[in-house]
Length: 385
Ligand SMILES: Nc1ncnc2c1ncn2[C@@H]1O[C@H](COP(=O)(O)OP(=O)(O)OP(=O)(O)O)[C@@H](O)[C@H]1O
Ligand SMILES: [Mg+2]
Image (tube, rainbow, N blue to C red; front, side, top):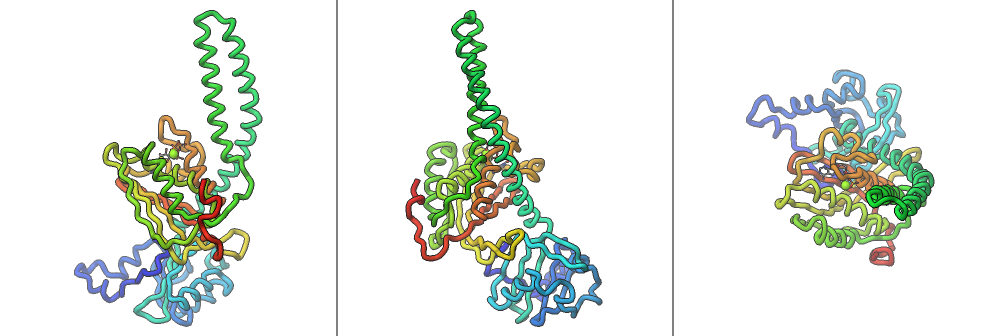
């Protein structure tokens, strides 16, 4: 996963000595669809794989030894990241960066830069256009989706709820006069009207466009609360495993909204796991070097607090993955498809990022959140519901 500071790049020679002669590091790197390249202490290209050749629109011979500044503008975020990783000797990931130059065109990528322990001054850079970057791209479009839901929620409240109360009232009046068999039908009208009102009320959650009120929140208390609610309710028959980093600093967040996020994620997990054999794992971790570029500005949000909800269910159905965070996407007969849309909206309102990995037997949703500004203590009002 991106952003681990302790990651080391295995020495090429060791891989090249691997028992299987076809499995050289070079062959593996050549097959990788993601651009990977190495810059030396003077930011000249020392190595690049096939995908990086394509990315920089040139061959090995022309590119090796070329300075990074000949390929991309000196004020590109990539240059700053490379410098930082080299100086601080940590690996850094940055989500949602646009890299562009006349030579390479425009790319929306996640950049990972890691210093190479075996080659002082050298850093290895990998660019991901398809995987995480695409998820983030989706996440950003979910914000758009959430916005359109917001407008729709406001519209529904006016255009649907009011006439519904009229319909409901009329049915109640009719109930007095209709023949005995008709009462069943007027009841049906009333019940269905109530059901639609309940749905519209749920949509109301999206209608709130105010910036959220944020304080330092102890995320472990949030998770404890969620675990208790879930454990005595919908996740009663699941085993809940907790793996927390107790030293995690406070989240800059809204406690009640964060409860909603993790309740929804846990509910989905509980609904996915095999009956009688369900395991849901909640974990937290500090993750250095994960940042989100803020579109249209130079600033970056640091997102070092990672909270993951993992389950041992069958995985997310292939056909909903691309639109998972959109409203009304569901594979459940009684599902509304609003859980993850709401989660994405709340995480987005926190300036955070959500991503998922899913395969049969292991699905994990990772929420990355910003830290509370230093000096403020968690456990203040708002930390308790
Ligand atoms: N942990 C998971 N494992 C497998 N599939 C999942 C998981 N979480 C979500 N999904 C898939 O994503 C879909 C959308 O989830 P979402 O929470 O938005 O809606 P829902 O659970 O169907 O309905 P609701 O509005 O009641 O939450 C689900 O219907 C399911 O197919
Ligand atoms: Mg759900």
